[in-house]
Length: 349
Image 1: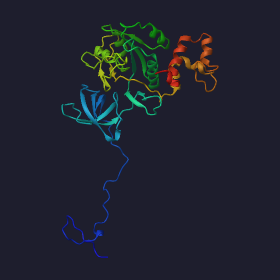
Image 2 (image 1 turned 135 degrees about the vertical axis):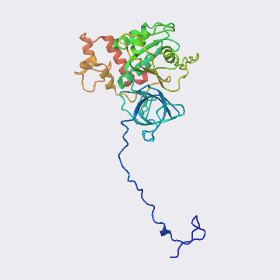
Image 3 (image 1 turned 45 degrees about the horizontal axis):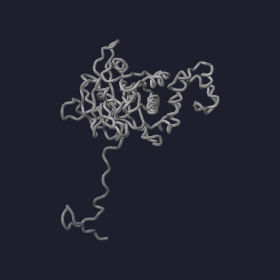
Image 4 (image 1 turned 90 degrees about the vertical axis):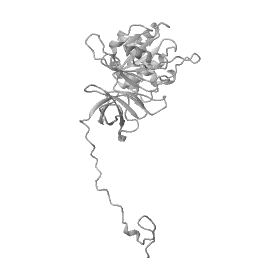
């Protein structure tokens, strides 16, 4: 077999056989499953995410801010607001510098939602929150207890303490909503323009708290009052639809100013989130709701197998406890309303 004539960079018209090249050499460095050790890398808190840049604040030293990218192996959506991360590279935070997030610390809590009740994919909202403030306007836009119930469910599922904040009390009486939620022992704060926020400040002190609610209910307005200079965008409610316009476009963690309340609390953090129009719960197991109501769990021990604890469930232990006077009827009704936000979502829009 005669050698093949090839033209190329070696020289025009040179004769050589293809076997002269052989196979490409193997890599000199063998592959390994060992990962780099980042245990000594500094830790930062993710404050907000903007177009692939992670704005963070160091948790040690002077807690200065910095901007970082994310290591590819962490995945496209692997880091969210509230996460504690290990960073390497230039962590000085000087203008023009860029650190790199290389490791995600284990999350204490993770608040999730789905796009709707048929969506199987969870969407993490924030990480490491201690509390969830459900902000609801009493009017303009009108209050929607079904939405409150759904966010309560998400909070119980995530293991974060729920708080209800009723705003615009100058426009409507909060008594009806207070009566609806007092039986489930959720702290309720009522506010109006220029009202005293000391009760809310005390609840937030020393905690990381995420604010959730519809657009236009006053989330960002509350945060601007709690943190002077936060400058969170606020919006108005559409008169035709009665719904607010989205103003905040991304979640952001904001450090609270020093708090002078009893006990010398740490200030804590608040996380403002974009307004939501719906809160899907397809990721929630109804059993987690019962576990959140610890005083009710004992009454379900004698329930028939497969009991769903709804009002139409035969021989439910909760009804028997209420009949004996061991369980307040108002608390049972409130629990069932929250439970049915998961089991019967079509009624809780």
